[in-house]
Amino acid sequence: MVQDPSKRKYSLRKDMTKEALNKLEDAIKACTDEFEPYLNFLREAHFLDKKSLHNKRNVDNWFAGFYEFETVYGEADKWDRHQLKVKMLVPTKLDASKMVHFHTILHGGGLTTGNLFAPWFPDYKRKWAIDSNTIILFPLHRLMPEDRGQDILDDIDDWWDFYLNDLFMKWVKSCLEGVRLGAALVVLQNLIISGESAGGLLAVYTWLTQSAKLSITAIYLQYPMLNHYRRDMPAGGATYMEHTITEERLRPLVDAMIKKSDEMRKAGRNASRSDATPPSGMAAAMGLSLLQLWKSVFQDGKGIMDTPERLEHMRKIEAKPAQFPPIYIIHGTKDTNVPIADTDAFVDTLTAMSKIWKEDIKIDYERVAKLGEKGTDGYMRQTAFRALLQARKGFRHLLKGGSTEQVRHPEVFIYHTKQDPNVPLDVSKRFVEQWERLHGSAVEGKVHFKWIEKLVGHYDANGEPREPGHAFDYDLDENKEPWLKEMLAKITEV
Image (cartoon, rainbow, N blue to C red; front, side, top):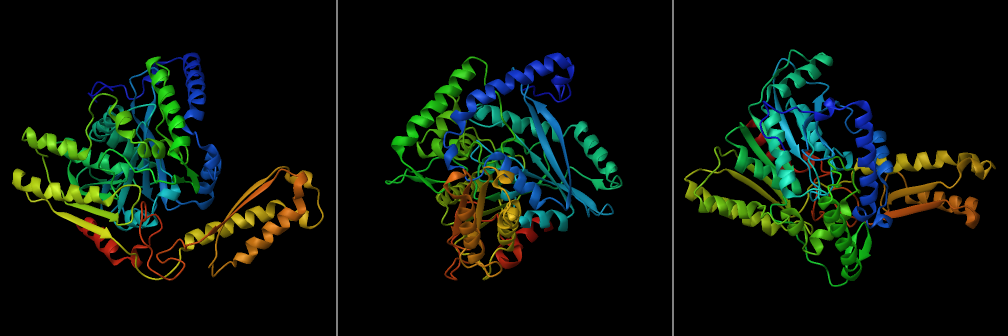
């Protein structure tokens, strides 16, 4: 990547003729299609495909309270000239009479998947942005295995170069003027940086390497993946998308993915990804971590450091960050994806390093063992009910004796909790019975009916506090979790 923002052309593609650009896009598509089956090697385990997940986000209208914008912040210096984009969410109720700050969110996904994906964007972060008069920035970066660790870190460096460049604020002002918020006083100072899961690695990397340039108010880490990603393979096999996969089956698939990726990289045919909607790319993170191969792919023979390694390197060369903003961390004690022990070790290391650096590092660390008030999650109930109504609408004419040709080969997906107090489970059961009776074996349409054993709320099906695992905050109501509400208030106050 070109590192000098004053000399960079933020879109080299603009120099290309239309014919050359079309030819480039055709080549990118061919390479992407060639690698796709190696990347998503467990497609049969994907409960919903990419299109369905996009539709779900659009139907739910999760970001209705925001104006959405995007722009290109950089471009990969390689054959596909891959454009790196940043998404911006501006609250529609932004108070232009008050100072406006930025909150940069670095997404999770094991560095193999992720984008501004509504099901992975907690409700409390939406409310937090609105209440604190904050604009959300969501930079995308390249993903593994097509690209490697140094490429990703280069993208993060380039994002912060763009953030500090005049082009960035000109773009922000232009967007705000377009929605009649041009009078807002937007400042680069008092920046909040947050990272969830793999984004935690990038958030801490930013603090340790970029803090001389940035004015960071707070760092917020959610179940951060601070170490090279690795998990232990269970004796009976791992569970992925509710499918069990053994090491014997997984290893040849992952080895084939890595081999194909290396071959395409060597031939200069690896097409980058940076806007991957789950589940695309999720199997790669699962496979690489369980087989202890994530580190080698991330490092790519270049010794790229994770957080513990970087801190140790800084200790040896007697280096330290330029500033020490407060660090806020939440991590579930039952996290089976990213061990909480790694976060414990990170906090202990920072405490020790603070003495070496002779700096006071404020760390607010919440080890979440149980979740609070009793209740169920209305969002999941409403989504399931909405999906049920849409599916019923699709073949309502069948119930009236209509032709099956009008709904040829549909496939229906249903989630429903056994304890749903609003829509009884029997409604879905009757729906499935009607479907099977009307279609029979002659029609290829399938219905996927999933009973949710535990309520997607703060208590499980037995009325016991839910044990938080990985990504446990996606459905949290901050008003039911005093510790979360207090932490958000602290960050906002800072």
